[in-house]
Image (cartoon, rainbow over all chains, first blue to last red; front, top):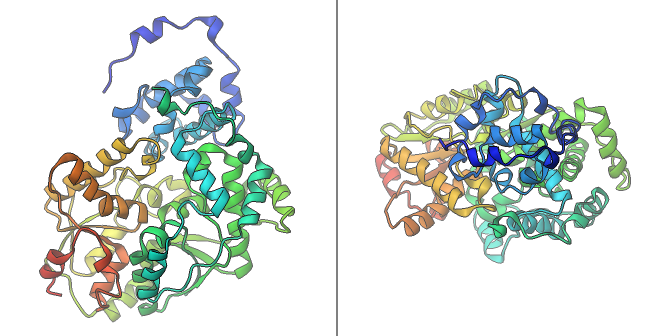
Length: 182
Length: 291
């Protein structure tokens, strides 16, 4: 378990807080449970990726409730969530932590922060309709295994959807990704 | 038993042995599966991380294609399962979100209502029907084989969506594996994440997580890992080679997809199950069960 970041606590100034940030999250489907958090830390205790996080999951929730908007959105921690949902299962308050993290990441994306790997993945889906493209080698492999050809994706439908949701536009004009910044 | 078959994109591009073995086993157990035409990527939680609306609308389009077939859908991939099942649940229970999604789908001449049921193939295999069939058709006992069963997070959690098994102490897949005569061993890291979801963001972390699992299975005396998820399977097989290289150590524990293990007990040939496509060789496993 990491030491609590005392230095960080000292540096909070009320002028830097955005108190409405918690409502911005609570008003989304993904973030609707955030206000129930009472900081027991159960989510962090079971988190499999805790060792790689600069802030612990319950700290991210607390920072969000306090209104430390830019610190949360620019933190690499939110992108490390493995979405294993252990925290959701164990939270005594019914906070869906993994989903709150989805909400935080969505807002980070709207603020033009996207990790490179995820941007690539989204671009693949936009272009190909799938995350990874099959090569000739894999086509042959399927033939050898007597598997039928995989049906073609209707990429125009996928592109239409991503243009209408606005993700397409968000993929352009990105700030440096959180892992590059470090 | 008949299902729409959602293959997803990772399996044909990275784990065809899973598809092959699943189809072989389904045929043996008289489970009919029908491919879905024109489906896109499910899409995965990484898209949910970027934009909820894009995630659910792409999933909704896939669900519409399935709805049209009038069948329940079965997935092989835990990721596709989690996405389709959760999206289906949200679309069926949240009118506001459904309306927003339908506004976009209308332009494509589509409207989503939600399908009756989204299942993972493991759920179907763990059903009473499949177990009875399996016992009937089994020709080979896998006695002596010690298996580290790995469910994969999204088959179990969030449990209020998945409702497959106890999320902290699952047993269904262990019981199924033991029907073959193999022994499901206890191992420390059984319920931990395989690391695959963070591969695109932090590769070292993804490798570390997979390594911990592999070492834990090995330490507990397992001859192999068995999983029903292509992402976890790739972590345990292909990525194992990378871990061995980076950490300069030999781990050497093979992985089987669940239908491959069942296929062996059903007497299906190893080539038809795609066992020779795995990177970590399965020779020792086959020797233990004398195949």
